[in-house]
Length: 326
Image 1 (spheres, rainbow, N blue to C red):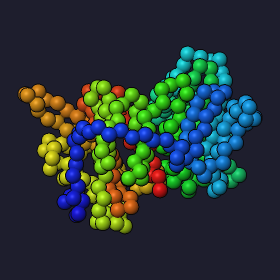
Image 2 (cartoon, rainbow, N blue to C red; image 1 turned 90 degrees about the vertical axis):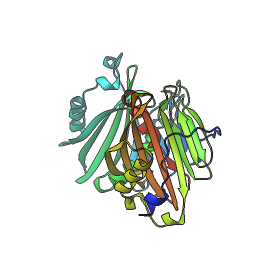
Image 3 (cartoon, rainbow, N blue to C red; image 1 turned 120 degrees about the horizontal axis):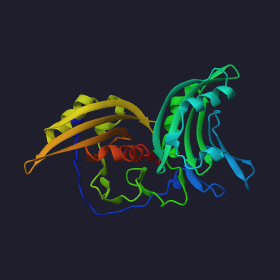
Image 4 (tube, rainbow, N blue to C red; image 1 turned 30 degrees about the vertical axis):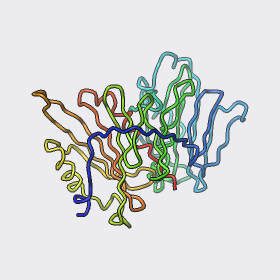
């Protein structure tokens, strides 16, 4: 295939041009002064606040197709001193079933949003005899439970979730340091890099590096050969073969097709074992491949295997926050 011939896989390239990004340029910024948080939402969403704009306990955002995103709050003194990773999904399922009879838990996981632990639960519910999916992220701050909820009809949920996932990751409490935002006008994308990581790069190669040596790298190739194609046309065997040409001891450890900003993407993970000065050094590499408007985007996160568990969610959240501007 043309990809194995044309694809140049990078390891780490250091350069020196920094850029700024405001997600508000392709979304709408929302800040809640009562609870001290902010996030960016799609411009197409109509935002309302309850019980009032003066005292907005709940924020409701509606799409024209009926899908919705909400930020709900609930106070409970028993939450004091706890974090979301101490919540029990079974307790939440019982609460969901008290509202939606027969609600089923589809999946749940612990993650991180805006630097805070978060518990995610995804549920199948029936509303007015129609099948819906509800995804909720739970974050605890003091005695307040924050619920970030996405709701859509079952057959429309996957697309809606793909649209919302990057915007949800912009949620942060405003007493924290602002995240590193980057925008490339040349290649028409924006991304939210992890807080405290140093951004540098040229037009084709952008990187963000952590003090511990972990790094994120984005490289873009433009070619007429990519016209009319998407990442669904990519072969993981070709991607693996291309990276193996440069990193002889790299191994593919997993891959899957996903969507980022509602665009097809191929996700892959590699384990790279190398010997430097007689010492073995191992790295975990995350790759996302996207083809859009005759451009191939390669998004990479890399860290030592000993450091990877500590930075995995941070790098994953950053890479999956990519948004295309046009």
